[in-house]
Length: 409
Image 1: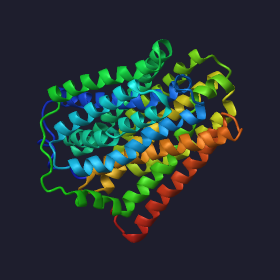
Image 2: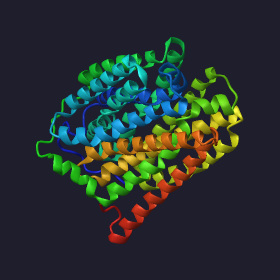
Image 3: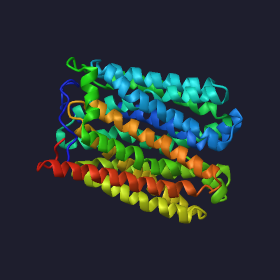
Image 4: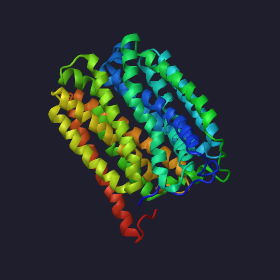
């Protein structure tokens, strides 16, 4: 069975304490994920409103999704490498407050260029937060429950797609798109208080160096897992980035129906987050393979049923479930493959997923702008998921061919 990797001795005091204390700590950590999930995905639900507000087209405005993703890609390795020696709880608090500042900047921005820059800034703390939060959560429980602890943190992101994103979308539609980002700023303030109140104080790793952390990037299994996430997860974002016009232009529903489809994705994400931790504790690698295969099938189904609202809703729910299964299991895979640099491994997963976010959104805009319609991003997405699966399997084959051990890195 694939494990999440050795415990980082620099975090807290290791497993122990009563279940209530651990539960409150993981809930506080998950609330930060809730804020991140809300700000990341509400942009997709409010894309038509933002485009009108800044005087741009929907395909061009879709590039602000890529700007946020670029912020995650840049911020995760840089912040983790620089902050490896810092106290973990303090780093988590600083990162969630930085997220709030980025969302305030988005709400205050005017014009396409300013919004692009603000979304880049908002994305910078994203991956690093999940890196440190996952490491703290894993340190609080026994080894055989670490998959579930990490999925508990990621559950906040999934709950955001059920509650935070639809609520913020409704808010943005009724009070203006800026109000959604002001709401996220409020959530980050509450999160900071929760982290200070419930997460145990923890020391950094005094032996950590920037070079040592970044050496994880040279490990072949880390690179294969990153490649699989960067390419394969782009398939989900290729479709989901343009769910709003898919609902209105293909399913022929009013814009008021968009939040219900965001809710479907969110319900699936919550179910998937619950399932993913258990799948990871069962068999991490097989879980990734199952997730990719099922994602390909679901994206192809969406191409065929997009004009039928009920079937489209069900397919979007399934895609949300598979997104959580893939995201969490790829994160645990990277934590294991990174060895002593587990925080970087967890953070890099979010860099990879946001490369996927940007790639999917960009390719979706390309095929839409070429006149292929709003179904076409799902077809592109299926192709990306196939490529991601191929990269992941090639990584496993390379490892098996280089050593007789079951999980060498």
